[in-house]
Length: 206
Image (cartoon, rainbow, N blue to C red; front, top):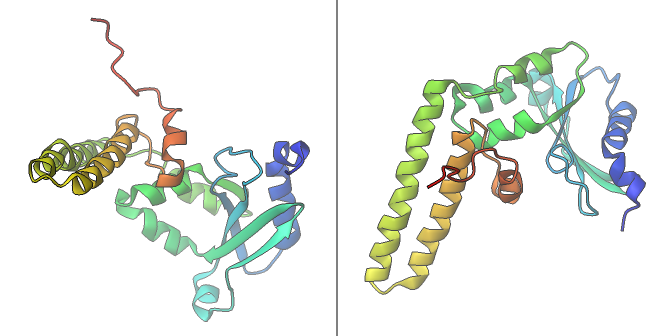
């Protein structure tokens, strides 16, 4: 088990790694910390996941490869991207998972301030987009359960019914994030992040 002091100072360790590995490199325009460490997970299984931003020209030349190493007792992984590729993932507000990943990431290196300016554009859904997403999640969730779930039970197909029910739970938990005007975490962290939401149940007194 990792020593408690490592867990308590995880972001400092991440910053130290970035300073040693990436800061000052001509091709590196920014570094983001993503994943478990960025959202505050502090256990012996946490790792450090970085996204390193380089120029589109360098990216297309293909000289950078995803890599990993061990650093002060932690597994460290990093991949490469560009400002243009980040923007393409976020533009249009289509992909809720990408929006969540970048909204929860920690900026570790941003010499020109361009990383911060880009991510600030995607902090909250525009209200019209949020309403559309709420309707969509409710519509497809309801279609899975009760509608398709009950149809499967009527056909005496409990396994398929369970699949519909499981998918409905995932869709409706995603809806809770949209209701709270939050982005939707990917499956691995959804239930953990659900506990942080303000609106999780009907609080009206009968």
